[in-house]
Length: 379
Image 1 (cartoon, rainbow, N blue to C red):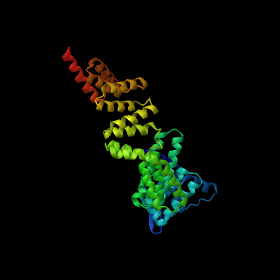
Image 2: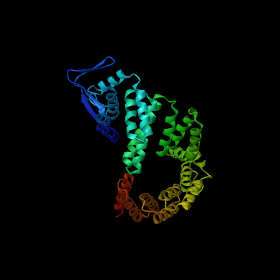
Image 3: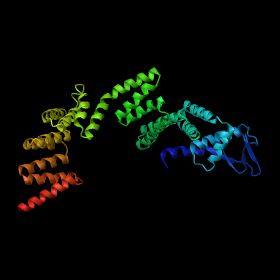
Image 4: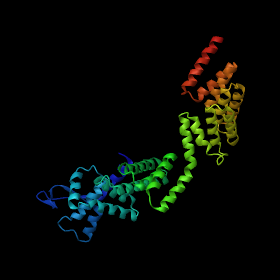
């Protein structure tokens, strides 16, 4: 059982069941409920009536209705739930409006979980009740925040993901529901899905009419604009579309000229389109900004290696190994450089070190075996 269902199912402890006598029945606007059927009531409400000496022998239908609503939002799989739903619909065909009202009142008094119970009941009765889904999503989001503040990130992530799912479900039902776009943009931004956040907020701008919200989102889009450019660039890089990646990443200059990562990514793009001079320029500048990042040394060394400048590549790997923590790629590539120079003992030492640091890399294992086999033929 998920943490979410567990939390709300715990609420069934707030419910007491009463039963009609076997020889009696209950008529609700033509719906006949036979004796022996357990009927839920909210325990606190029952106790309050007992204390006020206001509990007659007859069942107060309003108390049962409130109990059914609470049970429906707490445990939709309860054995008698179909009968209870029939009771709600017979009691008042517009009962969903009452349930939504109860949910909003709970939120006003800061009773998040109680509000969640009512909105869950709303959704069970009316799966396309978008306002109920929105508010249930907001409840889940707030509970997620509480968990995160208590350093319970696993639980927080589960509630936040379910909240995101509720907002996405709204748009599957009605793609013009602007507030779902509003909230989803923030969720995508939180998960560092910046492009998705921007596209989502752009749809919001086309639909919403509230000027304060519109201005808020315009400002949010501006704030993530650079993150979007980086994400787009990385996406193109993942498909080796270096030209399009470069187009996106160059837009970050000169605003982010002093950002090592931007320069590093631009250098990789130039390497990809075989403009090695510019690749070396940007990778060198990235190194000036951050000499502790091993990936920069690795890419710079590869750029020299591609051009046949083996000594320069080895010098770069030497510097990287000296200034960064052990990175198997630097040892492995330096080892390949030594192979090119015919310095096989140095090569096998480096490749053995790379293998020791990362024994799961199949390419390293293959190169290690081939080099060992070759050395054996020399002896």
